Image 1 (cartoon, rainbow, N blue to C red):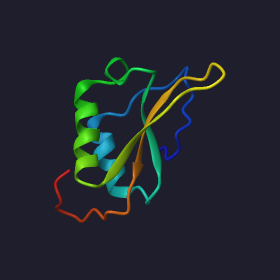
Image 2: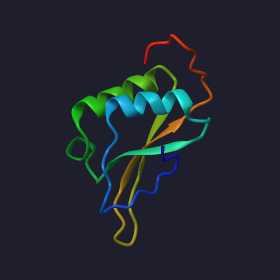
Image 3: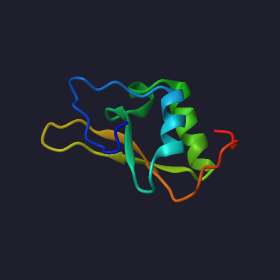
Image 4: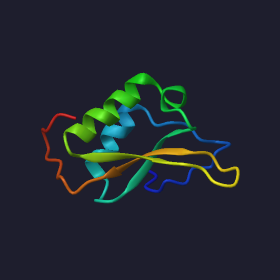
Length: 92
C-alpha cells in the first residue's frame, strides 16, 4: 500500500473505506496516504471515505492534511498515521 503523498495524478484512484481501515492497521507512525486529489475535498472523494478519515482522526489513529499543489501539480488531501497503536479487536 502506498505510504507517500505523491500519487500519479493521471492514474490516481482514491482508496476505499476498507482499504483505509486496513492501512491504519499496518502503517507505521508518520506514514502517509493520499485519499483525495483536488482543491475541494467534497468534490474529490466520496462522502463515506471523508467521514471515515475524520472518524479515524477523532479516534487518534491519523491526522488529515491538505497540501496545495504548486506549478500545475494537483492539491492533495492526505492522512498521516499517528503513533496510536491499533490492537487486534479494536473497531475501526
